[in-house]
Length: 509
Ligand SMILES: *[C@@H]1O[C@H](CO)[C@@H](O)[C@H](O)[C@H]1NC(C)=O
Ligand SMILES: *[C@@H]1O[C@H](CO)[C@@H](O)[C@H](O)[C@H]1NC(C)=O
Ligand SMILES: *[C@@H]1O[C@H](CO)[C@@H](O)[C@H](O)[C@H]1NC(C)=O
Image 1 (cartoon, helix red, strand yellow):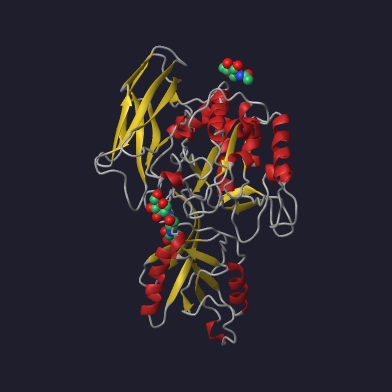
Image 2 (cartoon, protein in one colour):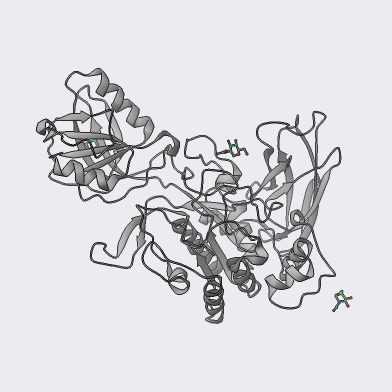
């Protein structure tokens, strides 16, 4: 299996603890055999871990052939919470890995922290950028700008020396080569403008040179100035760490997107968490210290592992599925994508994790081991189910994927018929409480009903079921463009304290 770790940064890949265990080979070129992955996961289970954080993945593979899915099935059935990276193959659709419904599939988003650099034009206009290099002795004065429309080629030698002492502006390109080239020609600083497609996703790497990265939108402001000014110049102010950046959280450009190929009846990814420019532990070497700023869903999955650990401490008896439910139904859905447009569920999952809300979700959607067995029986038959469970399974009960008691709902009504599933919620809020449902979805396209409308509980851990059905409205399914209609299904407690939200998607595929 061509497995790689789900982190991205300038060509170097490094391992998390599970990764170290199961992958070998030279740096950046590790190979992880299926057998090693499986043995590693089994060893962790045997060690008695409570949580598995898997920053490891590759292409989508059928679950009954996927060592991570198989290894984590055994883990989940022993009550071990499994949090795994969604993959870094975005932003194209159908690029997820680690899709099994017994794991939490984690997408990567930005945090509201910026390693700020201000590019100050003579007009006083300030263009915000970022840099991991924050020299304290950089000249405060305005310096000439050098920009060639032929950049970023490094083979434009021979270059006369007239650009010594300037700030050079580059559009994209391999950063490290450019740094060396510019340095050797006396550049004072470099401003990189990222391509439009990556939007607000600025992956930072240390350059050991005054290097500034601008997102494309900010970069265009600089270019407009450059081409209009006869003698362009700018000053650069290194501002250090700035908090409260308003564009966050935004799903990172590289974060893999659904729909899931391996589990088309389950809405994946499940959640998004911090995964862009994260301070991460690092195996020290000559040129890297013990901590390093890294980007990738490999950085996001451990955040969710940490949240799961906190929730497990607060609710020691909760199953992994209950913990996942709490995380998903309380997530902050207001997340944008890399282009700062509203993110789809297939990018953000239920939304950005909100740990304190997750500690007290009101209702949970639990899933038992038997439910997972019915799921794998329904999907793979007895033979395939045995491959996943690695034991003889009794497939007298089986279910369709969408019937799994998942905290999100994906239905695919066919023809004029309604698609219908039952869900069961468990009361973990107030013993005596009632909840009313609301469904938000475009009524002109989808007609959806939930029965009953209200659930009344008299004690804790009491379970109530409800059914959800959806069919296409008179106009039928969308025939072009987006084949998925997004909505949400929300149970709100009558005292307003709990809001339990499930992503709700109707598929025309
Ligand atoms: C992914 O699918 C969505 C609709 O579900 C669509 O709007 C978007 O353009 C697709 N993305 C790519 C990169 O094709
Ligand atoms: C950056 O630093 C300059 C100079 O100290 C200051 O004027 C400016 O307000 C700072 N900008 C931000 C965004 O912190
Ligand atoms: C499978 O389970 C069903 C229901 O519990 C039972 O009736 C049946 O005998 C079982 N089959 C086998 C082969 O154990």
